[in-house]
Image: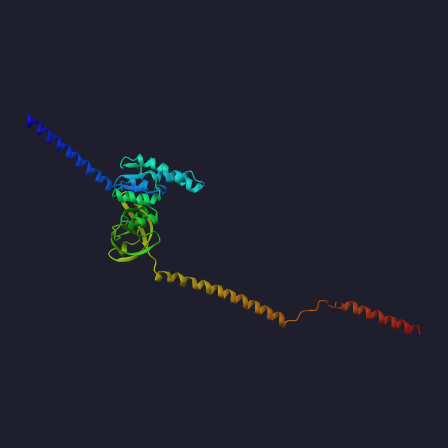
Length: 301
């Protein structure tokens, strides 16, 4: 009977030890994966897209001091900050509805030395990390040895390496779906489709990116052959004859104007008042009357 009691006691002790060790390891693992969210992250809002995509490394812990700070901003007099703070409070509820992540509201009490200092102390105490977009908090946490998940750095690292309008050299390895296209790849494996470049397949050319197509399978970039300086010279030569024609027209007009002025100088102007010529018939009739009058006088004498 005593052996049975000892055996039962040993079984109970073993089960209790196993449960304690499992719970301690689980809590340690959970504390290491805890991500303490800053006020700036909730106002920023991009944490929602990251959480929905499944890139949150552990549970999101939102301290009560962070919510209290959002509440003070939402009740403040600044309309811009008030709208952002209310948006952050709504975001907390949206995060809680996502099934793929765990969101926990932590009762951390008041923060006498500030919310940022409270976050650093919590992360150091429970061996967690801080998620923030605050530049100063990021630097202080790094000095304190706390892991920081900065959303701004994440967005910077995953942005496009090349934007539309930029130029780069790329090696074309094969033809595209259309016969006139050439296909090459960037260093990160992004496929680039170059228009009117099938004749350059097997060589390296300079291309200019025109647009980006983002899909669930990845991104694809479209480009065209970059125009060189040699290709632009014929356009300049074509413009020169037009300028010469204009010059010839202008010189022709000038010559005509000079000739016209010279003719005006060579030929003097006619008098404004012209003398009316006496009609020869009138003169002859006047002389005849005078002669007859003289003859009449002489005859009277």
